[in-house]
Length: 498
Image (cartoon, rainbow, N blue to C red; front, top):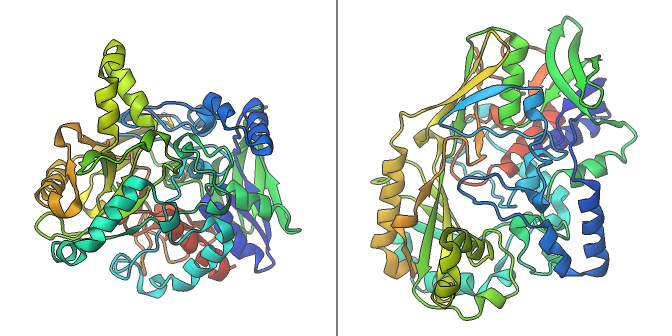
């Protein structure tokens, strides 16, 4: 059985793992952009000599509200996509990746499995992912840290202690909390605070780690620099037209089955282009998010000098039916030097004058990054045009801003128990699609209709073509989605028809 997988992100490596365990021969096609060689050399030197001063040249101080996250200051994540897929956006963000490992290269490592309630709209025949979650967690090995209590920052530890003292009152008002689960190898972590720029020791999980493992398998072939332009199904085979980025030459590939794992956005474009029906639309759901600076009620001294990680420290779930019909997910981040750079860029020449006051402020500043359920978020509309281009726009029908403001108001109401006060005037709401928690353009169903897929990721008009990434999730609950995408892709590779 000869099988092609497209894409090396979390879904791609997970479905390949399941297929290889069934003795299939797997060829993985990948655009495969990688970090520039000079930056790779610098990373190697840092890891070899543990010379953290060298990390300064790898830092890019992006404005989180406006600019894309660039690991190690490089654009390799996003480079080249628009040379092969052309689109115009209207009041939204759409940013797929051609990188080896896809968008996992900019992932913050937050992981969680979906609850029974969050899986309630999944097809009945595949809504129990417990076995597949456990297998992916085993596969993550040292990159899975279920409890990060031992590496909490001082600010996070202070908040956790306060919340534990007031736990019954918080729970009575709809709050639950825990330390973050992170896909990070903390055994080797230097707590250097560079997480948001790209870990200089490469300890935050990205799927290139598992791709390297797959390459050791005798039945696995990796084809780099290969961009799938379209696919078609025939009675006994699947045909792909593939263009190579470097020489721009096209080539045909044939396979018994095709598993598409390009990431929800890019997979949606590939589906529409392959159907070649101008005017056809897909609806890509989003778990919209917001950024809310807050001040904790106590100064924590020397946070600027503290050894710490700068990923999510604590997680809060807010279940309050008067605000939202679905739980809101709040990730809490403590001090990072990005805050200082943001202040410098805003204040310019005033910064040296204001610095003592700002440093005192930083001793209390934390950031909440909040997510809403896709059922209460706006979605993207992707339309395929006669020209072969795409138009991508947002469907502004949901009261997202109102829900977010109600959440902020509720946090303010309970500031005593939470030991922090929201700074509403600094609240920022993302554009639709900007959270990167997108999917459900081809949702799974027990009885799939047009533009839905069966539990094996096959659109109703295909037998041999499977979509296995976030595009097939029935909905996008608030909170981390990567572990669920990996578990579901592994399920399809391990159990699906061949």
